[in-house]
Image (cartoon, rainbow, N blue to C red; front, side, top):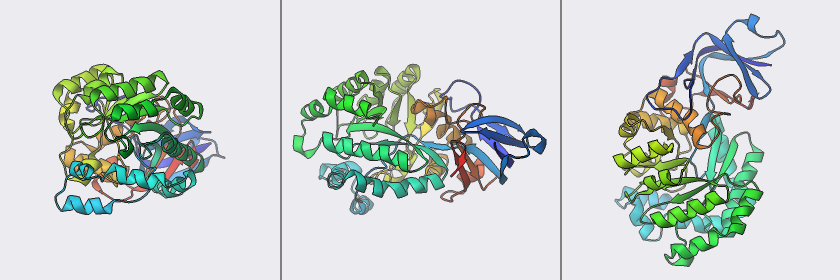
Length: 407
């Protein structure tokens, strides 16, 4: 048995169905210890050595706060190349959309990824995941979307799968072939979708266990609503759960589409309207907000207060990618959500644990510190979740436990 003791407080989401409304309070266990058997949380009891076997392995939390392992439910961690030239262009006044119209943006990363092998993509991404783990992140979703050919999209997904075998973080793959229309198709999105929606390709993705989700960038600069509907419903028929990049730059009905197709989440939502919020709430679609992206681009944040007040559950992720959110740190993203969106640290904790787990269909396994859940824990070197968010940019992680093992 492994025991974590001398904890200032254990912070986790309240008991109840997941995802959780943003106004629900978190649960704080004080003067408690956590017992772990194998990869599972066995109990939460008073911090008294009488409550565990004398031969138990004990981790002293040194009066640090213990939270569930953090879950980054929206990333583009597998990529090649850098785009600091675009960073300078934005500082000089060009918008992200204008850079894309001039031939930059996602397509620059596509060129770099196509030149790489699976091994090279793995070598580039592995240090990124190691840094995420050191920040207390134990589960990461990784999208394709920088290949934009069948061969290169599969290559990205295979790299993500291999990364899950090489280090402790659990990796969950997402097929984002509909990220943008590649140059070869000269704006003909329908013809491109004919290729990436070939049923043999989708069946191969499922057979190899490369992805559980499918995602599309529904935007005026990428795929329209009808094309997005086609992509998501076809992928769903092949067993891939829909997700959608929605309402980031313009409001064209993407988040309403998410609700109609039963998407697990709609992500970004900087331009979401009240009608779409209600549609998502009624459909059980989670709002995944990406505050580090808006911060990085210097644009308006998503209207989180309207979303929470309407009862729509919120998750938060980094959107880590080489163009619009070169931010690997989920704790920093939580701090940005507090300072720029008006969320409380407790709300950001639920958004990066219980609700992020719900987005990834893992709410019964990870995202909470409860008996019977997988023992994914982050031990902080500060006494409260409030201090972790307050120290923006500091790594407040003392130790990480993944599947019951200190890593």
